[in-house]
Length: 433
Image (cartoon, rainbow, N blue to C red; front, side, top):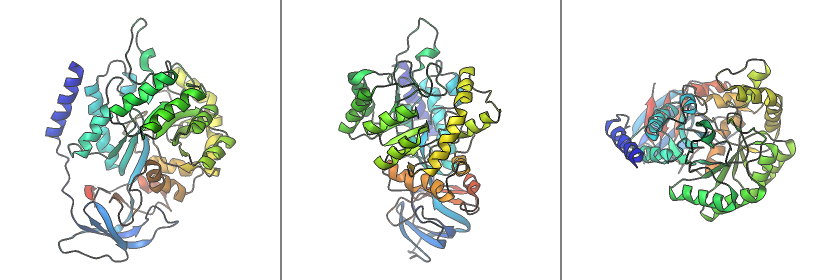
């Protein structure tokens, strides 16, 4: 109770002291040197975009200019939809992971406030949080409220709550404390009844999605990426409980069998899927299940490991897993590029530090065989489709989420890392022209 009081007081202080707030929504006419609408196979060339009340009202070679409209001259820039990150951990980071047993929720809130600002400045106007690092509170939900109220600067947050995990599973942090001590965790559950209760507990705290760990992982100390966390019956029960409450489900799953079971259970998206077989990828495609491959976090590491460049900033257990699975992770990445599965961009930021620009994920996907078009759609219109967002493309009626780049990402995908202008809901949050 005392911890929660401190946490709430902290958010009140942050709300009172933040000086981030952007100007109110205006009627704007954007003059773009080149535009890609998030859908077409190629950019549309010089265009104008009319923004009214936070939404796109018109797009074309010329648009109406209402009285009092402000002109935003981006005639030397490439304009495209704001980026969408479908897999992020706003309350994470290397220091958080190293000190999980000792950090309180106030510290996690501070981490989240900083992460929100960095992510938005890098062009990500919407994120789906894939796992709150608090073991007893819903910190991400409070961050979402603060962003929505305009109290802190950040992307639109889709709250995935806690990652429901089995005892000893990927998001069970109990093994990180001294023997003989216990740790109450809201996210640890097993059995159909226990999983239904966990889903209901997340839902009553207002989460938008339900997430669970279907397999172990690389960073978790007590399991591996091919270890199975739940039976088919348990996964079915969890997804059914979420469906009854109108909550879509996404799953952390590396191993092929975990991915297959989750797909059969009816999840909407697979997170990672880095050891999936060709047959399972075909199954995802046939069922219309999305894959969020988080390649900068997983595949880039596998590539460096295969070269002998081991990551010494992780535990020895994690390094051993990296070495064991690197060849198969790289093989799977190639198969993903050849597949017809729907791909949405996810960075997994928070499992590594927010000093890294999440837009590197675009370049990583291209490096692993995706076309620039498919990679760009993954971080805009395809991610919006996954998340049921009225965003991700530039068209009348869509939310006015826009970014400006110094060049054409179809020619050089790395320009996505050089955002100079960010608009969310018709409000300009960054303007380095």
